[in-house]
Length: 122
Image (cartoon, helix red, strand yellow):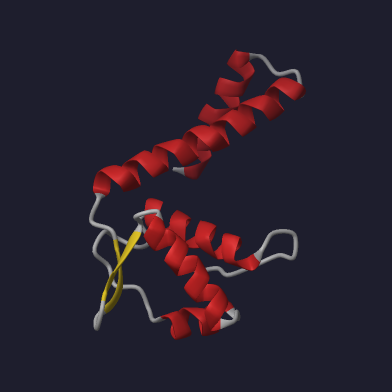
């Protein structure tokens, strides 16, 4: 996972978002076991307490669950994951549409750009 973190937002919030994105994009699958707090902290070059705080918050949101001796796992709630994926897609799309409006592009122009980019990425 890419752990590029910046100084503009608290580190634990960035970690939450990166892991959340990894879950909703399918990098982490429902039921997958996460690496240990210590291993994730080393990988992300952060303090284990910071990683623990982020993972606890993800547990509170229902994206992770703990099994005492086995570690942390990704939720099996595929409806939750699907809902969060849709929410993220709508949020990003709204931001894109707002920017296109600011650029003065018409609906047709925006759709043409999206279609062109989709063709390029396939």
